[in-house]
Length: 144
Image (cartoon, helix red, strand yellow):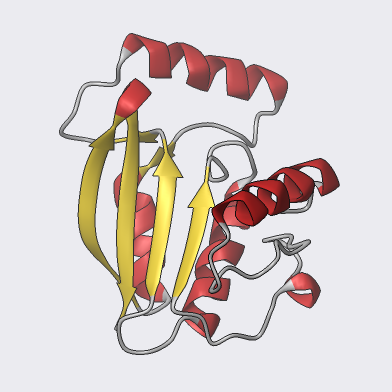
């Protein structure tokens, strides 16, 4: 996470969990490849980023995942709200999308199909869509 405050919070939760396989949070900017770790990684988790950043950040995330996830089978997990052609947009997500775009016109809910197409271009295959609370989704991708 590029935010020092967010990294401090992640580190505190990690210490509480006391899991031996958790690495410290990184000062990572999805739009800046000079901040990217080299991997390989078994999994990458990204929550609430794709809609609160320009599309170029999602492009960077997919490039990073495509470069660093262990092949085959490395896992990319995305969490957040998405637009879906076959599912009516919840009024709360429509209002949230409007709010995001009013703060920054490059922000906004991303189309799930566009995210999946971008992932595929980086060697990642969509494997699971899970409905989550508050009209969010968890999207899972595997490195092919």
